Length: 330
Image (cartoon, rainbow, N blue to C red; front, side):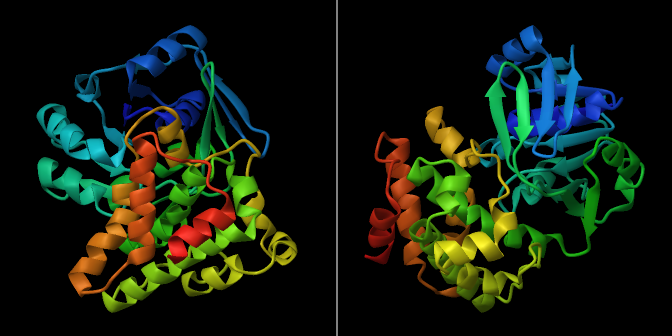
């Protein structure tokens, strides 16, 4: 049995794809989604035209229901990791395999601190999932699931491949997680823009804001001796240069970055829309913590964190690109 703990957008989509192709999946998530799925079932679509259904998924709201799982995919928001880790530690079998499919760079370590024994495998979801309502979850951008290379995953690789979610395995997963975090710095920019991802990334002023956050982060990573992995066609250190080119050039040379569903927004934008605490502390905030460790300043990411926290309290989330660029420059 596979348990999805934290069945929101990512959890329902990944678990739904697995269930739709024959895997035994139990979902653990919020009551709101449990009610929606009980009435409508799950429907999983993607930008390439896939359309799969799970009429009657097994959905619960208690972590206890993951007790018999062989494989546990943790997809809760980072703020809930410690609490969920403590709950899992009480119910999981000793031989259960746990994979963190969360944003940020240290969630697998937090899980393992509670579970012990090196049981947790770090993973990453590179694509965006849109929750369209009525049980529909849509993959709006490209990418494949990524995880640390571990022999315990060998038995599950065919299961993920059959679901159209092949696992890409890495020997240096921390480098991959930092590379993903560089891309995820756009989550906050998108949330503050109030625009869909495709529209936001099509405007140079917003891309310049993202480039500034990435450039600052790359300098801090270099000072810390961390080399992010190459997970896009361009090496990480060249991404800020690409982001700053004029719109007409960007549209032409970076077309794959704009292959996003027109309605897709970042998960941080969704959190603001639903009145939830965002993961900014586990994305831009992670940069601030590393900067403090190496004695560097990170004013761009610090300002982004401040603006997102204001937005969480009802502040602006309709910044134009020019306004946001000016705020970050100051």
